[in-house]
Length: 146
Image (cartoon, rainbow, N blue to C red; front, side, top):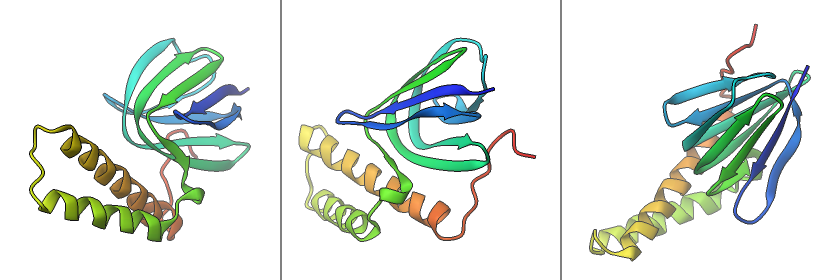
């Protein structure tokens, strides 16, 4: 038995498929979603969405958003999302350095520029965390595994 999962970012469909389990970084904590789950709507924190299909697991870095869960489908509308295998580590490190340099220049904390720089820094840290935790030998812990 499977549940449909759709992960959509602002510019593309990131993932679409039938899966055994979806693990979301919900606002109240990490939650595992199985087929026939009770309906719910949750905001998403910066973190990782894990989907497992026939024993294979894919992991997506997600920078906030919302998830709607219905008994047969999980729909994620993400502010930003990408498969961790698509992350360019060098580019993420450069983005983090640029953001840190811009913040060090003393951008006013109440400005739109500050918020944009802070968001860029959080996204780059998320990407680097994904590479460190999952692509360099780290094994994700998915609820429901035996």
